[in-house]
Amino acid sequence: GNAILSGYGTTIFEAMSRLAGAHNAINLGQGFPDDRGAEDVLQVAARALLEGNNQYPPMMGLPALRQAVAAHAARFYGLDVDWEREVMVTSGATEALAACLFGLIEPGDEVVLFQPLYDSYVPIIRRAGGIPRFVRLQPPGWTVDPDELAAAFSPRTKLVVLNNPLNPAAKVWSAEELRLLADQVIAHDCLAVCDEVYEHLVFDGRRHVPLMTLPGMRGRTLRIGSAGKTFSLTGWKVGYVTAAPDLLQPVAKAHQYLTFSTPPNLQAAVAYGLAKDDAYFGLLAAALEAKRDRLAAGLVSAGLPVLPSEGTYFVVADITGARGLRRGEDDADFCRRLTTDAGVAAIPVSAFYEEGAPTHLIRFCFSKQDAILDSAVMRLKEFF
Ligand code: PMP
Ligand code: GLN
Image (cartoon, rainbow, N blue to C red; front, side, top):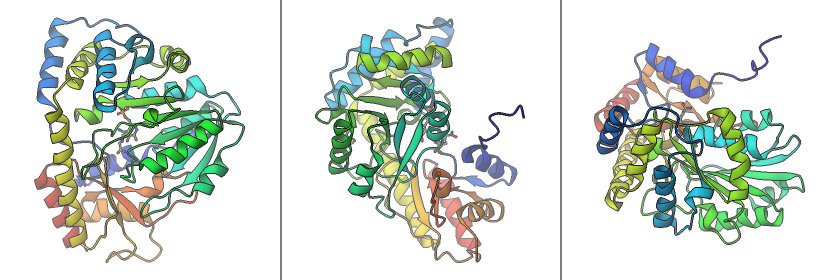
């Protein structure tokens, strides 16, 4: 037929947000904050839109933003980044991922991925001709089996995709796990594409460690960030890739045909934002940590035990023993019924699997006003 992309389903985020809208449900599915975002960043953007240039910016991004990305990497991670040769601005992390995968993968290349995984990775990898090799993380700790990890690599491995902190598992990778992964990448002379959009959303005193900072990884890693999560402006779609010049070059080739550039005045505002003081970044994480605790306690009191949440916008609940779970009902059925009947939308964790999905876990987003979180918990208590 002519619908050659018909194999692509509708993403779970769109599907559940639509269902939530149709049923007037509280949407704790798709991950986005319900506040206005960083106010001063909005002001800078508004001024720039009216007074600045609204024509195509340079393909690699505004120098001001590329400099800010390099300065941010030095400030938080001690990375020495050459903004002119090692930073490119993209239209969100989504485009950064697509540019990296299209730019680096040749047909037949193998790509190592961890399940659960973000839903945009595999469709792009397959379209680029790559062959996914999955490593399973074991809940509730989402631990990785070193033997399974080693077995996923081969002489044909081109790259590994790492999402840290990990959506939907809310896992922050430990130093030991990162070392294990770096050892494999180095031993197989391959690359790492690191989706670190939640880099500032880590809790309980944890510190985010980019894989790029591990010994031997600086020249093998492409690090992706996004203003969406860092400034609570998920609609903006301003992302960035940092990598050694020889890695960034093929990615820039893909970028020129994907989007070419990204709205210049949003870039200017993000450049301003990345230079905000440490208090901003600390308060962002602290506010989310309090929301995590609030929702997690509420879910437990409604009869839904939760898994640890170390970072991201998300907490995963176990529905195995939930009152009101029907016989034979899986996580996707349960989420639909929770949306239509309880008025609370969540995301089935099975949507983050290509194969062998668990069917007893659902993901809630807690980056919402306290009153909204409380209402959601009240609805769940009534429902159960
Ligand atoms: N990666 C992960 C793990 C995400 O959760 C998201 C969703 N926000 C993205 C990438 C996409 O980021 P952006 O909105 O910047 O395209
Ligand atoms: N990253 C968001 C989430 O995991 C969704 C983004 C999207 O809708 N594509 O909920």
